[in-house]
Image (tube, rainbow, N blue to C red; front, side, top):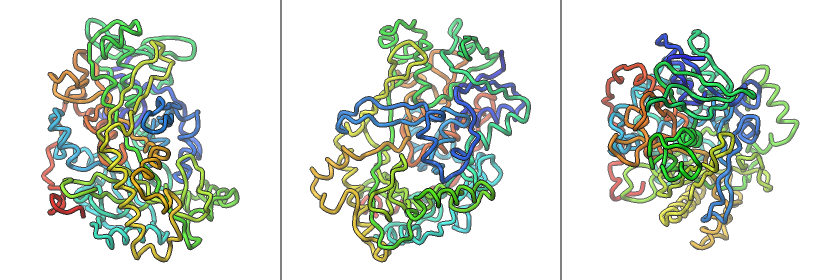
Amino acid sequence: MEAEFVIVGAGSAGCAMAYRLAEAGRKVIVIEHGGSDAGPFIQMPAALSYPMNMPRYDWGYKSEPEPHLNGRELVCPRGKVIGGSSSINGMVYVRGHAKDFDHWEESGAQGWGYADVLPYYKRMETWHEGGHGGDQAWRGNDGPLHVSRGPRANPLFDAFVQAGAQAGYQVTEDYNGEKQEGFGPMEQTVWNGRRWSAANAYLRPAQKTGNVTLIRALAQRVVIEGGRAVGVEVKRGAATEIIRAQREVVLAASSINSPKLLMLSGIGPAAHLAEHGIDVVADRPGVGQNLQDHLELYIQMASSQPITLYKHWNLLSKAVIGAQWLFTKTGMGASNQFESAAFIRSKPGVEYPDIQYHFLPIAVRYDGQAAAEGHGFQAHTGPMRSKSRGDITLRSADPAEAPRIRFNYMSHPDDWEEFRTCIRLTREIFGQEAFKPFVKHEIQPGAALQSEAELDAFIAEHAESAYHPCGTCRMGAADDPGAVVDPQARVIGVEGLRVADSSIFPRITNGNLNAPSIMVGEKVSDLLLGRNPLPRANEEPWLHPNWQVAQR
């Protein structure tokens, strides 16, 4: 089999590229190891805790024991299904802050500043403000990806925003528009009551053109001849075959699997490849390095009123909600329930937000375990720009074996101070007048935990990944020895090979990573087609005028 372009991974970026290449009349083969995304567990937004805990849809990766988190192995769900992680994620839509992308450019990713990427964000989305206000001029209105907002009917969503304002923070109608900083409505990739994954938005329309072939197989290595990528070796059933690319191979296999595939193909740190008997094609010491993620805590409060989602946390209610969704695509099942959010700064002198909040009107964990207290609500919070870095390395040269994932969470001393600040500021928000009718007491961490040592012990035991791994094939200048791809997403030292997914992020962006991952696919598709990039944007994002001297 062959096509002009071979893309490994039908996830956020891979689906976007397949769509744009097919639209331009190019022939594309997309290789995906996972199977179908049909069925209510994926398509029903409120069922989000199920697919990421199902081996059918998830690669099942775990971190190595984390030395600063009491030796815990943290789960690292990655989508092994059509749509990739966009089919199993929380459907939260955050572009990232303008300054994140300006930092990319300053780090050597020329052409990836905010003014460069904003036009792609506009191109990819159709935005629905849902009666909650927002910045129409900053948003897209005819892209494949529908971005909507939940109904925010529960009074707790409004209480969260009001409490933020009472504590002296900004309010924003659109954190994806001019002003990220502040409290306001959260956005979701949900459309007509369904998860609007990259598969629904991009891949299915692309397949309808007749230009895209999707094959189910395990990519084992990139085939390189004379310094050029010419195809991908895959295992399909018991057979091994080569899918050939007439023009280019593009890895969009995730921040875990893209560096793994590069290393299996002889591209990576030479000494590490030699350990596993892999011939070196290009010595790129940055492959698998620079691993970053967001950690978060759930700050949980018991509710004095029975208005939380806990009243639906039983089999009968779940069955009724499921049936309503199945037949009408409406009701509680049609939202991810993340409907209010905030981005704030931790202290004076921080230029733009470095703490994120997801607010949820139930006290529950990602694995679906509800708090024993019954009615409650929670804020997910954590620092945005941890200085800790981890790595992805090979366990062996066997493509079927999972790589070794070391996040090295909380290895930088600043992480501890930042997390303690998150707890302190959250407690203050929940202590505002707007929450007085609803707060009974603090469930987690618990009001008794106050000292630095007590809070640090809580963090070490309870911090969880927000499932935002990135950075392992860092983009930078072509002469940067630590960079893996250049600003055109081309693998440095190999012809005809690019990487386009969250692995190329020089530094993690504010918030959830689905939106910037799709944006990367959109932008790289223009590079693959040899098109000029979209004209730079002129919009000036909002920064707090007193950020140097005030925290809020």
